[in-house]
Image (cartoon, rainbow over all chains, first blue to last red; front, side):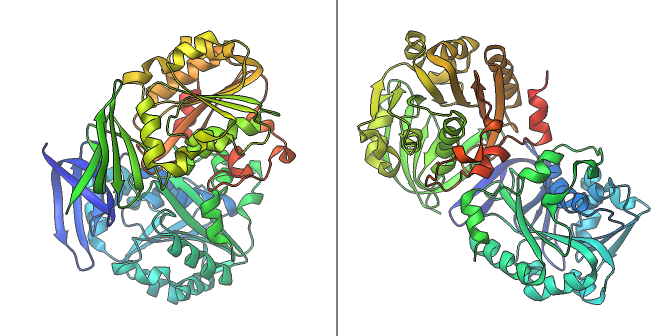
Length: 276
Length: 276
């Protein structure tokens, strides 16, 4: 049989993946970090026993975090990514020619270090000259920023451990302040099969701060249930009003202009989470 | 830990679910049948070690097989379901008032028997007076039918074992003959992460027989990768041309009129499978 890594996604359900070998394992100041070479998914980053990203399916998450808000904004120049130390969101952000600066604020420098070493196709973009990498607390960075960013993406872990502050109403208010007057933010907000209450709460909290609040989804096979949600808060621009000519021709494997619109069509049981 | 059921969805990846108890287990004339009571998904039907349906997530598959073609057809009266002995597709078909008769042709009577016993919320619809249940070979049933059905749904197992004939070009030609002149058919066609070649082949085969051939997707957490595809062949009616007023108000948990359109927007790597 060999070695298998199993993530218990709930108390009663999980995924299991064959491991060729462990590339690295350590307890950082913030979390347990493991880098595994798997047979199905390529190299896999695991934090606190949860799959964060894999070489095979990472494109879905990273494209969908980045391109939906970036195409919703008419001219994004200054972009902030909170979390996301693997560099995948930054890689996608840099595909947009309008972007002049992309700042990454990751609390755990070890995530960056070992992503660069073992996930070079993902983290390589962190070396780009338009990128500034800060090893810092995202919550504090946001609190210090004012009218600075066009788009902010929150690429956090689950709302346990280091990311717990990133799912609070105060954080969304800070984001609104950190954004310019027509700014947009997106956060990953887990899955509706096992975390319905979280999605309902985040939607409700974001809606109190942002005039336009919408949930969209993507299929990510190694994440719990495979159906992942993202919650967008926007001050002015409506993602469903983007004109065809706004979409530049960028190289993607998941995102298309059709997906940009279709991802907001929610399954009924998910849509119901966004009703008062 | 207790007992866990693990389905190896590929040689190197799988899902694992806590089992409270086994309700039934037997080798039928066609396959290994197991009915498990699981802690996360409720009762679960397993055929040849593959999850077929669970009480918790069955609604996605059954709604998406049934409602997309049934709303694409302007007035479906006579419907055939090949396979689907659990009765879930039939339950959804019966939500359409226009349907006068729904025939189920399932090769394995044991699937029907134990679904009625252990999945009553799914299989109960098989008792409806509009339903005729035949324990028979779907391939042979299709071969004997001519200009008979408005909509045919192929709710098969994987293309191994008893269902292997249901993924052949000859079968799709037979379906075209069994349909009326404006008939529509849909087949479940597995997932694009692990079975890309199958989707490409089915799409190509169906396209040679049906003027309108389209692939759509749904998220099913207990199926491999969570991203499931369905391939539709239609003689006349285009699923993307359905008018708003065609949608009746039916009770669903996944399907909506927005999803009807959005489900045809394919992730780029899936869309690429439908190109020549």
